[in-house]
Length: 598
Image 1 (spheres, one colour):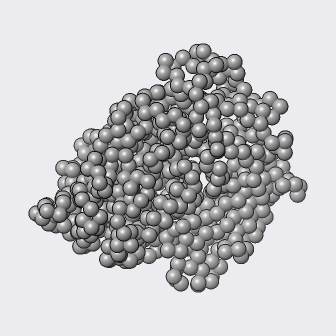
Image 2: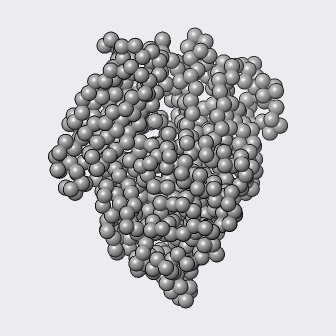
Image 3: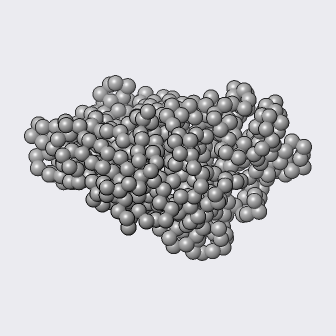
């Protein structure tokens, strides 16, 4: 059985592709001798196991389920391209490989990639032999290195606390694609809601002689743009007016044609590249007209104040860890969240599969994108995080659901940021770097506490205590009540801003709290508070949310968390996505105030 057969790059779709998920040959290389012994050679007999790609060897669905440390692993599989691809360039794509990958095709080294959470690809055309190839991949994932962006992946062999089982190697789809030597290499959409225009940027690779690009944009099946552009240079940019002075297309009339969680309107795009009438490349894509900005201490969505009701989502599954076993897993998580009255999530310490973002776009679900942090700080950690963020934004820029980026969390990777100028510069550097390559979204410099320059004052506070701790709860409500009280509070005994920085009017949101621990019939695991049954669970949830809604200054929140994860039992759902209580009751509590917009 092959897994994950859906098209892996929904923002740039071509018809000619081949999914390589399924059974691969596999081997551990604990002595790191594979390169010296040339395991990439056809004659190598080192591959003594099988693995089901795209699942990491630590998972049940991989067919191996080995939780011990193996820092170097190898993969191997054969393929044959379809006869119809003759004359085309063949591109080998990897959705994500954690952490370093050396790729060989037909015994020849093709390329290297470092970074465990982003896509990469190589042109393998010239390495094929009569349309056939053998792929061999060496992967290195240092189990105990605290300077690589590892997020929640534990550097201790057994999971404990907030740290979970590691993911090593391939964990997203591997696939082949056929393209013409002259093709569209980049397509970027930037909506301008104020002007009712969509900015389109694209790049063409190959021979630029006698080329034209045909653009077609449709909304609900109706063609709104049709244009042909002569191409004389590699890079081209053009804007198309979509609203055309029609008032009902703007947000003046409900959401008009704009994208919101309540009305996730999307435009379908078809792009054709032609030479003297001959079709060279054809791409299907889409975009949404969405604007996010801050003003008067509030977050605005499409120029209207918008109260974000987010849920923390770590994106783990019991049998497959970071990899969803099916596309339907993403749909289920979004639908369950929305059924509880949440309008989005903060994807925590994980760069999620583009298929999740596709469904967030389609179903209407805000996303805060967050990369895995490294636990420790040094110059290598800075460089690694910086490279990954550049690749993250290049991959996910076009998704309208993504409204914020979170480069750092709770001072992970910058443990002395409170008073260490070098680490403060790293926080500032990430904030400005992300804004320099994506001016359309909000950036939170250090979600939780010890913030530097930031677009949202994002605070974590779990000090609500249990129901019996009345005095602690009243102090919690008091801390959240006003701007002065919340900014002077010290959750986790840390200041809200790092030394030398202060609040300058940005919206204040509580972006981690809650975490009620409950696992029916089982006392194992942990949460920030605990209850014994689903009635107590609902009562405690309501108690905590009342404190949030009584605040005069909070303009949104992110509740911890959507699901249990391994030993953490503080989800609204179990690890396998079963509700712990009546989800309609959760929705009623979430809608006690602020039904979605202020």
